[in-house]
Amino acid sequence: MNPIIVAPSLLAADCMHFAEEVASVEKAGANWHHVDVMDGHFVPNLTFGLPFVAALKKVAKIPLDVHIMVANPDEVALDYVRAGADILMFHIEAARHPHRLCQTIRAAGAKVGIALNPGTALELVYPLLDDVDVIMLMSVNPGFGGQKFIPQTVERVAALSRALSLRGRAKQVIIEVDGGITAQTAPQVAAAGATALVAGTFVFGASDRAKAIHSLHLAGSSEA
Image (cartoon, rainbow, N blue to C red; front, top):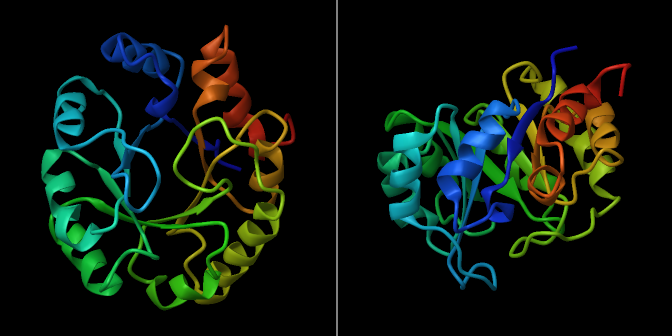
């Protein structure tokens, strides 16, 4: 089994030293930088925006996994791709024309990702399985870092994995999980079929970030 993709969430980084934090997790073995964009409308918080993504792109040595938790993804998605998003993740709950938005993102040169909140039916994304590169299941309610993992996420990952297999897309589509990921919860979602994990506090709050990231890389292996 291939190692799990690890995407440390910059929401948990020291905001006074972003450049150093970015370099730190890259050196520690991160695969992607996860950037949580929040608009104060779709979720009750304000975080990063276009200038931050553009600045990050200039210094990052690994792909930017940009998660736009915004009320108007159809209008702003292309701006984030132009700013430097390598993977652009929008919420199915907010998109008016999700299929068209997938096409727009891909045509602009980025990988397409769709995120689903914990209370959103998986069936909403099934018509789009041929059009995405990543499907991210939220394992907390979006809007804030440091929340506890929702156990029902494991069942949702397994169901999504089965749907992808039936569609013949299991090897093409990455299942990403975001929220409450630790050394305890990572093996659970990996065993169910997750292949990428977002971890904020677990990585940035660790005294040994390389060890924390390595433990997530191994979450899907027999060594975990």
